[in-house]
Amino acid sequence: MQILKRCRATHASVAEKSVNVPSTQVTTIDNGLRVATEDSGAPTATVGIWIDAGSRYETDANNGVAHFLEHMAFKGTAKRSQTDLELEVENIGAHLNAYTSREQTVFYAKCLKQDVPKAVEILADIIQNSKLGQSEIERERGVILREMQEVETNLQEVVFDHLHASAFQATPLGNTILGPTENIKSLQRQDLQNYVNAFYQPSRMVLSGAGGVDHETLVKLAKEHFSNVKPVNTECPNVASATACRYTGSDVRVRDDSMPLAHVAIAVEGCGWENADNIPLMVANTLIGAWDRSQGSGSNNASRLASVAADQNCAHSFQSFNTCYKDTGLWGVYFVADRMKLEDMIFYVQNEWVRLCKTVPAAEVERAKNLLKSNMFLQLDGTTPVCEDIGRQILCYGRRVPLHELEARIDDVTVDDIHNVCTKYIWDRCPVIAAVGPTEQLPDYTWLRQNMYWIRF
Image 1 (tube, rainbow, N blue to C red):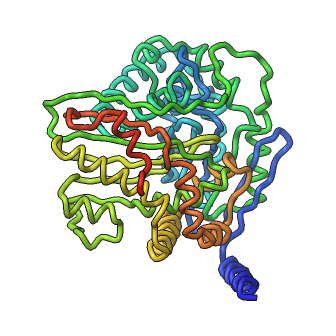
Image 2: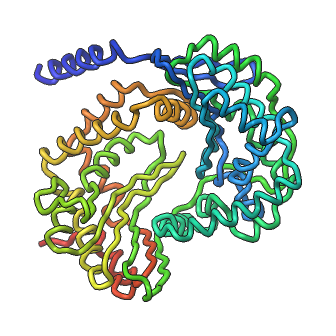
């Protein structure tokens, strides 16, 4: 009877919370392109194209082509020169941007709601009609090579690239998004065109809109500007399929004793977006938390690892992460520490992981659930993050998960769920480690591996 009452109360609460939440409408037009919107009636809007294409779909020969295409999209089309494109966007006060990840390529525009038709037309033009001119390609080589040099100064980015390369050895997920220098210097127009033909297809694309966006209007705009996008059934060379990427427990260390601090990431294999274990892993990730010495919080921090890091002065900062892909992921902690504190910090991280498998109290789980919900909802403050959330979820799940459903799924996570899921993914599993800097005091892999479980009598 108590369980029945709890279920009824939960359903009532969910129903109440969903009353004033704008619904996400999804329509698939004739060629397979999906149009998804959330109309909040805001005076501004964000519209964009989310494409199921990224560095995961590249081979060693063309690694970096997806990111290269992102750069080329703004260099002029058959209809507009680069200058015309920039002036047209500025004249309506819009912002045009793009980014590439390991599994997705995104082009989006933020504008006033009355300018949505113009923004969609511009997006359709740059995606379908980019000239990919030889002079522009040559110019962008230099731009991307300079960008690669800038990325190399961001040690967190460097560590995570090494982490992927070690965790997913000899698979596309192990490649970097920007690609190696030799590829950037050698990619040709035909390589770019092959990738467009293979992956810029309507069934792999979502036209997403949030803010002041009328769904039926956006559907009409999609039919008007994207109906010419047809599936291309040609065999394109040097294009990889999304095969399963094997995880390998391993480590990579780039020792440089001239650096003042060591940057370290340690992780285990996580799960994909659609896996039911993802929500409990997100709660567990929040339990580990994040901390930075400059923030001033000390031993009273709610995160146990943060309290230890502050008390023992064993790190400058740390942050937990849960990086998901379609069928796999990486769940772990990234931290920055002095060279003589590495052994202590890695011990406390692993000790906290194993504790989650066995003894985490209910009060901590409840706090983490509330914090996770708060962080998720705060991240959706604005038309651009909502538009991004819609596009990503349609590609990953095939639907937009309503906020009240997500909240209910988080609320349903129990202490036993945390214990079970952490035992499944952490207990006695092979970790992957990437470290850059003065790493001499970082324990060897055998020591790290044996600390992935407790033996108690």
